[in-house]
Length: 504
Image 1 (cartoon, rainbow, N blue to C red):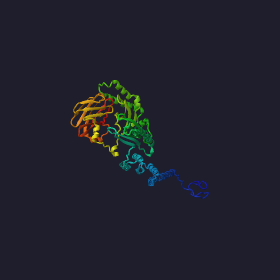
Image 2 (cartoon, rainbow, N blue to C red):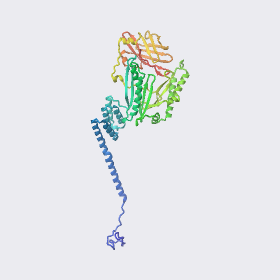
Image 3 (spheres, helix red, strand yellow):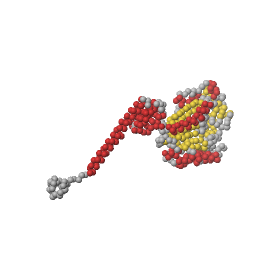
Image 4 (cartoon, helix red, strand yellow):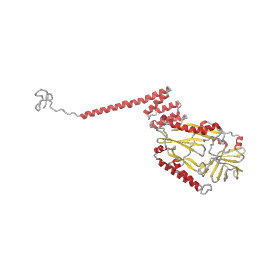
């Protein structure tokens, strides 16, 4: 056995070195197991990292969220809204699923008279806050709406409502410019672009004209909008109509994540459709629509030739026309488009809204606001004997005032014959009356239809709107009566409704 001290080799079994006397080990030293040391070291490192993560990120974050909200509220108390806004947004970035920062920031915006920002942050909250905290968001939205703040992705940036009293009947016009409510100013640029474009149109075709002729009806009758949303897209369709029969549409498709305007190709890509597929869909929808239109035409007409029909169909489904179709989303988030449909008569073509999914025509855009109620406006008429004398030419005169003609009929009695007086073109009409309802049926080659007139009080004229059919008739010398029409009249050449207005 070798001595570890001096190196002398002793006999086996010796307990002490024969040379230096040092004790000798009777058993060889055990080999150390290094893997145990590594295991211990790894466990220590893991525990240290976990503790560090908890200390550095988790525990301080809870304190940070609460302390930031507290500091933000202090700035609100000091009326330093800019610093408070920065802190509230910082808290939202830390805990986007918690409701408190959103609600506090919305209240601050309301207090600072910035309702658009309040709406925007509520819409962001609706998207991000955890389900268990959504009731707090819904309560805040309800409170805002109870105070007259509409909470939606798109609301009015501007609205106006006017009653032109000089016309007979009075003309009611309304205008709305949309505002996209994306938080943190993402939509500021596109909102300004939309506002500038649409208000310039209002100024030119409404306000400048009213300055020159305050009693005249302005060229632009309506500016209304509808909007839809799907995935990352907000889509706005603005109706601008210089005449009731000639609608025009302006499409704005916007990315919710960036606030930037989307091209048609970008919108279609988000909706999983190529431009080529979209154009094929448009062409097929138009083809089906024109086939339906042809099937409804009279089998024989001296006014409509096969050549006229063919030209209208070919113009409508032509590649050049299909290329002009603009895609947008309706209120259900479905892909729709606006495109020209050509016509034999009238304007020659009309911009029309189609649903690309169903192939059907989309409902037109209408105003959703009760302006008279909202403005508490008094639109009462001067219901004096002289007023009604001016509204009627002679006893039992029924007069229709349409967009193209003024037709006056002298009726001896409600079951009597019609004599022509100042007719723009010859019409064949028949009358029937059952004591409560007057029915007029006509067919003049261009228009066919039937009008049913329900008796109602003169004072109910206050509830009527342009675009309905009215007939005014002096049935009793002591009581003027107004008839409201529930008409089913359409122009067979354009498939457009014919609008009648109260007599003048």
